[in-house]
Image 1 (cartoon, rainbow, N blue to C red):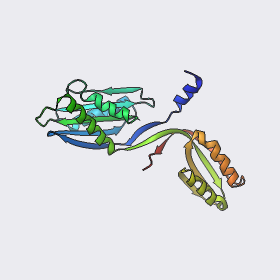
Image 2: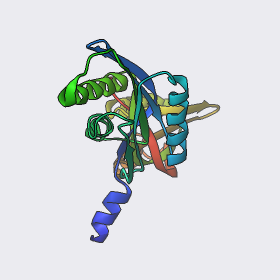
Image 3: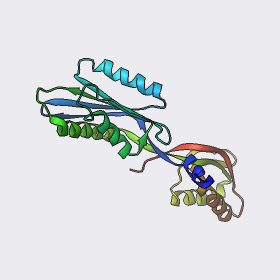
Image 4: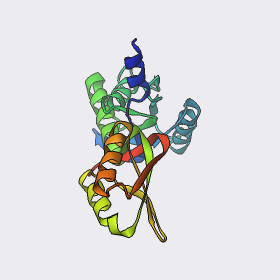
Length: 221
């Protein structure tokens, strides 16, 4: 792997679930409940799975899957007594297909008395996870920088207009004798923004990078 490829992998954006959810389907009287949660480690994932199993202790099956790591380094799944490959793997494939990481899911099944067959089980577990994910809040984690912009009130409108056109949200602001705005954006976009701010205000505004690292970029509705 070249240095460029290594750098791109280090700073690659990734998608997470930052607020879990719950979805449910009924298939031939069997009830499938998908519980989804954000997790940061294998220990958190295991603890979450155990808590769901405890909650639905009377269910026939509690089938888990999770994905951990910026590059999805750790994946696990289990059929929990269902026929091999009909539950855990389909659940995991939905998570990977959605390009999500740092997420755990348990699909709980209350048996309705009718066998679904291999294909039916795969479809049911897949659909249940999709329903669960639809109730979650997701975001892209992007490597970027935090910029502090200091300006006087005369140039504030120009700066707000510039930021608005670029769809760069202001994450905090301070109003004293001057104005200080804090924004976050991808690292590669920072030099261009600083240049435009300088030009738009004839260098009266001061823009300084104060921090770098991953930040949560909310998904657009």
